[in-house]
Image (cartoon, rainbow over all chains, first blue to last red; front, side):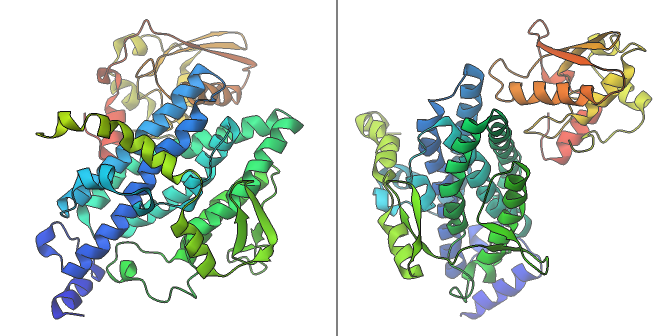
Length: 312
Length: 130
């Protein structure tokens, strides 16, 4: 670690915010680029992931709500990519020139959402994960422009959660058929969102993002915050989730051993097939079924009109 | 529902802060408590209550039946259903209210001028200036 880097780490841990590239060390800038890229890509890819299911909305009002959420997500991606631009990353390259496998977002979005019910459960579970991660960044990040940009993001994400929760309750309350559909979606999405927070702390002994105070909580702590919201909510609807409050009442514990094998085509967890975290990382990096189609959807039209933008 | 999003306290202060004259003139003795109750209903995106946002246009009461006229910031507001449900659920908790009918009205042209002083203060706290 360079002395400049040591001074910067001390500065951010004393509460100072970094406001410009001039104040950064190369290591800080590299780590910030990485975490903001993951954030921006996650927001961007949620749009096509949600769009397929949004077209199955049961009413015009419901469709408007879903499309507004998608518009919000694109706006959030724009904020992140704008920050990356300030960090010297070319936005044209970020959006339109990367290969599908080079985008950095949770594996969950690569699993197709095939129905309105699945979209609503995703709004409740996935957006709660996003809200948890960005809420932590908002509270703790040492990068001033990102902290301020997240004020709008967190307000809008609250609406997404509420949308998902309202619809889940409405569908569950409609009767046995609705309850079964919601439970089926929760069954495959809950463990997928548990994975969203990354490797367990015992395997990830060092985090530069924590060293530079780009975020404040570890993967396991964030997973706990998410479960603290989702498990009681699902319990309140009478939905079964494989997690419960632990015996000493200090947090939540899973009722299965991580990690597990997942059948991405059938959207089922193979509860008896335990795998290693290396295998999970290989699955994440290999991307899931919808990765290429979603990136193609985002990039296709740009290619058709590239002649129009060449001088802009 | 969380506590009111209004930072103002006291009915008189809130009324004074209400810029939309058409609303202030519609707060009648038999509906004053209902207007007050709707300060508990927050917009699901920007957590300011629907009265201070100027969304509630009129409340009429005949015995235990209540009718609410509500407008939205745009015709394609994504929160129409949620806000209407929240208004209905909140008013049903009031004494002697048996039915609540929430109607959308587009006769009122919503603009930011309908946001009360209290609402503006609250939005400012969230980093939104008008």
